[in-house]
Length: 190
Image 1 (cartoon, rainbow, N blue to C red):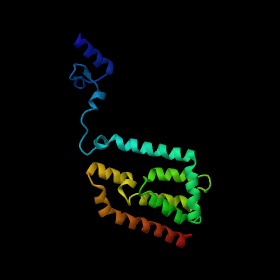
Image 2 (spheres, one colour):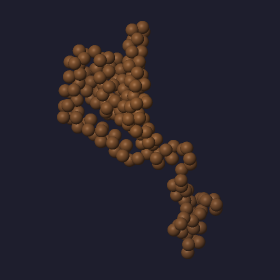
Image 3 (cartoon, helix red, strand yellow):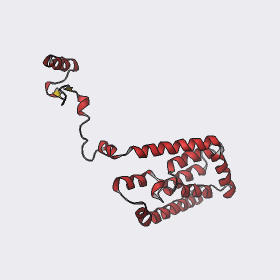
Image 4 (cartoon, rainbow, N blue to C red):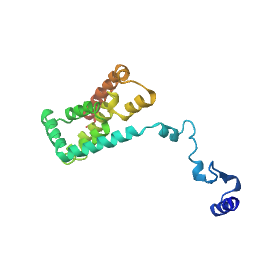
C-alpha cells in the first residue's frame, strides 16, 4: 500500500520522480520538508537561526512599556519637563534624547518622542531630523542603547566593559560631531 500511496502522492503533486524521497518515518519527502534542512553557511537563514528569542521579547516588552507610559501620561510630563529645561531649543532637547538613547534602546525612544511631540510639532520641524540623528548615533554610546550593540554582545561574546573601553568614546565623539555638523549645515544652507 505504501508504494501506491507514494505513487499517488507523486502524480497528485506533479513532482519529478527524483523529488519523491522518503523521510525517516517513511512518509514521502515533499519540497517543503526539504526546506527545513540545515541552512547554507553565511546565509540569512543561518543568521536568523543564531538570533535568540530573548532579544525579540525584550523589544516587544520595551515597546509595550512605552505604550503604557504614554497611556499613563508620563511621556507628556517628560516632554513638558524637557521643553522647560531646554527652553524649547530643539538641539538641546534632542541632545538629551540622544544621550538617553544610550541607556534606553533608540527604537522605543523614537517611539516615545513621537508620542511626546507628535501632536505639538509640525512634521517638517528640525526636531524630527535631530531626533533621528541623535537617537541613532546616541544609541551607540553604550552597547545596550542599540540593537547593533546588543547583537555584538550576544553573537560575538563582547563584554559590556570591553565595549565601554573601546567603542563608547568614539561613539560619543560621533554623536557630538553629528549634532555639530547638522547645526553647521543648517547655518550654511538655511
